[in-house]
Amino acid sequence: ETVLTQSPATLSLSPGERATLSCRASQSVSSYLAWYQQKPGQAPRLLIYDASTRATGIPARFSGSGSGTDFTLTISSLEPEDFAVYYCQQWSNWRGTFGQGTKVEIK
Amino acid sequence: QVQLQESGPGLVKPSETLSLTCTVSGDSITDYYWTWIRQPPGKGLEWIGYIYYSGSTNYNPSLKSRVTISVDTSKNQFSLKLRSATAADTAVYYCARARPAMSYAFDIWGQGTMVTVSS
Image 1 (cartoon, rainbow over the protein chains, first blue to last red):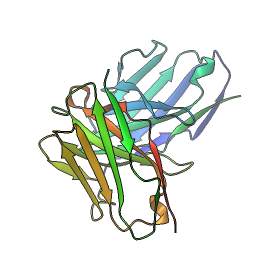
Image 2: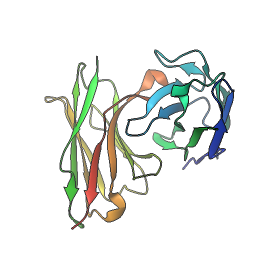
Image 3: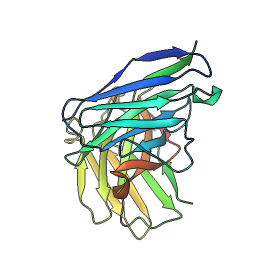
Image 4: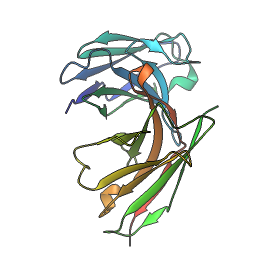
């Protein structure tokens, strides 16, 4: 089973700052990597798929990069509505797994 | 637009079977992989398994012995059964669509339904 490890667990930043979130896979997942945003009491929302493709309606300040085992989600300039928990997710061997999440909180 | 809606009991007794249904509206259930995901209170997301409209399935190895996912294409619904429930199965359960053209990312989610396992 492919394990995803996200870092850091918590990121404390101010609005307008740049956020860089990491996701590392225990084995190569090629580019089968997605990122989700979850706010309290809501279902997760797809942000990025194929490691770097923004989903429909996702602002350009969100970008994804990486392939193989190391991936990054970057939020270029944090807006107030971006403070949330972010999960990475992979699909390999016909199974999905999630990382444990990174909380982006207001500093 | 496509919408998913979970339904089922919010309270299940220990050792009994947790049963949920997801109704798909706005599109056909064919050509996608339909998935169950859960989230214990205050914790992260756990993939439970999927079913393809043809009936093929795959499950999380940690739950495989207790889980069955089925599909009813005539009703545009798919269902989850989790046997021998314990308190550890208390969670918000989400149904979601996995889209092959998007590397099986979960592009549409239900709102989630809270299930508590308690006597």
